[in-house]
Length: 121
Image 1 (cartoon, rainbow, N blue to C red):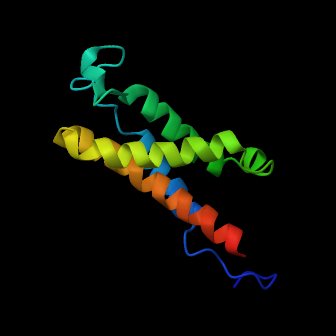
Image 2 (image 1 turned 135 degrees about the vertical axis):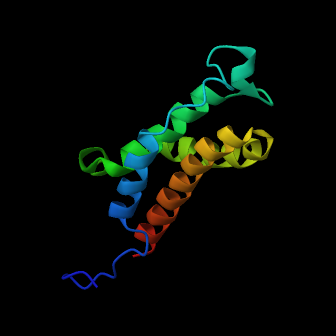
């Protein structure tokens, strides 16, 4: 319990931040998925754009100033669409792509869960 009587989220923002920092140090798999080329798309999904959209959701979640404004409808749609799209394309990626985008998907799932838990309080 936090000092104010509100149960602490089972998803720690510190945990998400540590995973985020580790993920940021991971290079994008450009050898396999060159941004701006046909190789950069899987099933019509531009992986570089998906990468940026999904990363923007995690960055928003971890920024107290931005979070203080609340989640806009656009941010919510981006979060949900990024989750859905990553889940769809992940099995079609190479091992390197699955590792990189799989970690990003896990981050998005944690953010999604944390936001759901916050709304239930």
